[in-house]
Image (cartoon, rainbow, N blue to C red; front, top):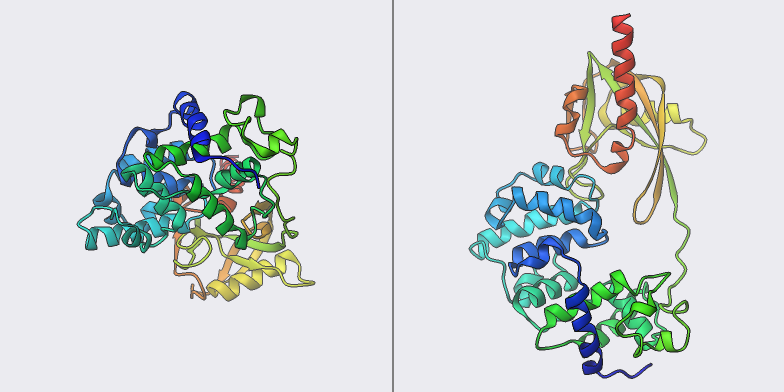
Length: 367
């Protein structure tokens, strides 16, 4: 491993950060609440995507009391499209604990803050170092990539048991007098310069220290284990029409996409047609007999660990009363009122087709 003195890295990196850092809304405050919200949103999400969500979220929920008192469905609606919705649910749960146990003030002690729902080592390190100047080193994907190239680390960055290697190194290189600025500088270097495939070494403030650059191995580092092929799930979903109303169901509050609304359906069995799967899964999930009208569209969508191919059908209600087997709630709603409910992104992908159906119906009625 390459040997670099911490002071060498600090002297080159921190001035570069002050001169080149992006003007982001959460960087104009030391309020731990604002920093906490931004760091939660930034997990596995690009900065350009987060900024408008952050601005809107802070208008509606400017502090812990406002957040803690908000209904979960409202929080999910503000989070709609940002993905990884467990982050939003945990943020709400943690705000409730902070309001109840800590008089609405985010704890500045590691153990207390770290014990809150959704607060892992990264979030705790980022918030406490940036807001309070506590000497905790952050370790995220950007930091791992920078460290892997600087020090020519052979441990794979995407292997769980390698995390300790990067954590120990990040802690050893931490600038103790201003850890918050240093942490942000390393992450900013990874975001702007030390990119995964095309690092801008000619503009890098620490290229003279970098082992990968000096040995022409920036394409070798960081080392990554080749990911397994992502499994694909084939799904069928039904838009059930009954007297100009559509049936929507709410997913259980725990688990994938918890608390979000969707249309009923489920996974297709082997050798089963998508239309038959639509009829079967709707009967199983909401106890309704329906008739498939036509295929509306096919939606392809990727989650973290799997992909879906979802055939979406328009359906006519035949008989039955809704009895839920899995979902936590249901509504018969007008199409115009769908915007009031938080839906996950796969559902949003076929909303434009619903508008086309509605417009065709209007044209037939007017002809």
